[in-house]
Each structure stands twice: as C-alpha cells, then as structure tokens.
Amino acid sequence: MSQLRCLALLGCLIVSPALAAEETCGKREPIYSTRAIGEALLACWLRPHGADDMGVTLRFALRRDGTVIASPRVTYRTPGGDRVVKEAFVSSAMETVNKAVPLAISPELGEIIAGKPLTVVFSDGVDVRISSGY
Image (tube, rainbow, N blue to C red; front, side, top):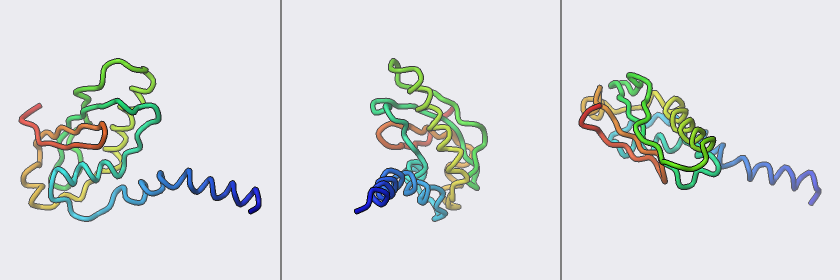
C-alpha cells in the first residue's frame, strides 16, 4: 500500500468519530423523555482531551418548541484539576447546548418541561432531570 494511501486511511480513522457525532447531532426525531434529551445532547458533545474525571452541571429551561429560554448557567464543576482543561470542559458543555437546540421536543414532553428548569450533568455521559426550581 502506498504511503499516501496509508496517510489518507489514517486521516479517515482519526476524523471519523467527530464526523459520526456531527451526523447524529441535531437529528429531528421527536423527543419524548428527559433521557432522550440527554441522548440528543450527548450526540453533539465532544469531550475535551484530558478531561476524563471531570463533570459540570448546567441549569436552563426550554420552551415547548425546544429552544432555550435563557443561557445555561453553570451550577457545579469538578473542583481541582488543570484550570485550562476545566475551562475547556465547561465550554464544551455550553457549546453542546448551542449546537443541539432547538431540540425536537414532542408536544407531550413540551407540556411537561416548558419553562421548568432542567439540571443537565455532563460527566461520563449526559444526564437530564427536571429541577424543582432555580
């Protein structure tokens, strides 16, 4: 196999996880649960390198149409660790929300969550829960 062909193949292998995330990010199938909101956000999330043991919690609310009412607010981040990596981790979570919205919220779920604060935890995955308040 030629050297050029090997490099092209290697490039495809390195880029394909990012391309796979791009292809699934923003899918328009209706979302019927907070678990599916987490899956939709996870499809758009690119975890920064070196942030294996980090976590961040965002709080925000959605309208019935799946758009964000106000900018997400950081309510928790893992203490300690490298400051630059922590900032990149928080930034990646915020960017994920911006990339994913508007979410294709089903009318049924929209009735339940519209205007209610959601707690979204980015760590090993993405977990979404309806909060009792801000």
